[in-house]
Length: 329
Image 1 (cartoon, rainbow, N blue to C red):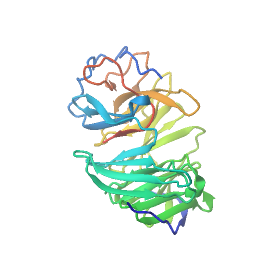
Image 2 (cartoon, one colour):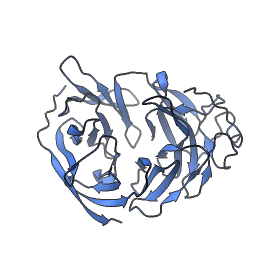
Image 3 (spheres, rainbow, N blue to C red):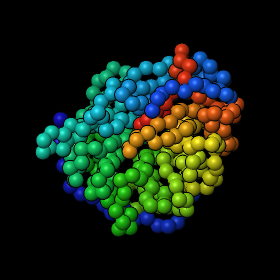
Image 4 (cartoon, rainbow, N blue to C red):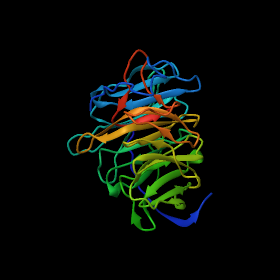
């Protein structure tokens, strides 16, 4: 193992210029297009990974709908990530002991479990709840923390320090804001009411969009880096990477959140009937809609749009619920 010692950081400035708890739920009305969990369109590809209660991280392979366990329940697991090609897994574990706030990063081969890289990270604030995300080319890891003193850290995948972003125009970065990888190791972040794109060497950024909305969250990006999805008020919207073409794509009498793009960008996985289950807990039911700019009714009670696909494991009769991290690779 290697000890990581971070020794430098950068301040980021940007220019305001636009650049281009029960898991049970019946399938319900309008959802009989997938009654036994196996009638997925052949165009649906990849694997959905999702966290559910004490079952740990589960996965569903598409289009066959086969479900299985992926990572056993572990209270020390801060988060996980999957490479864009679906071949490698990153796990970030709280490995702290009395007086030592270690975080263990492990990159391993999904197929055989072999460890590719492993190192110990210590954040400047001594925060043991850091999280990590693989860059699209698997060369870097973006590290986040729930402590403002930690900023956003970029590491090489072997743990070697690259840089640390602490603020935008002198204003400290928050800890509940989005931090997303784009192709070419660019980063998209949210900061206050702004969505900002930052390119290597991560010292300056450009504004994608100023969000004049009271309630917006859960920003995500497609693998091609051409489109964003997010929650505004109670529903899911998409827009182009330059902030244009904002469109509402879900409708219901409830709330949708946590959107995720399919690997090819042709579909959106959405959390329908999104609700709070405790002081820090949330849950939702997983449904898939085409990513074509149209609006889709995903209500848990009323008739759904014909092309809405409930996520059901083969052989089961209920829509899968999630309550934590959710990834589609």
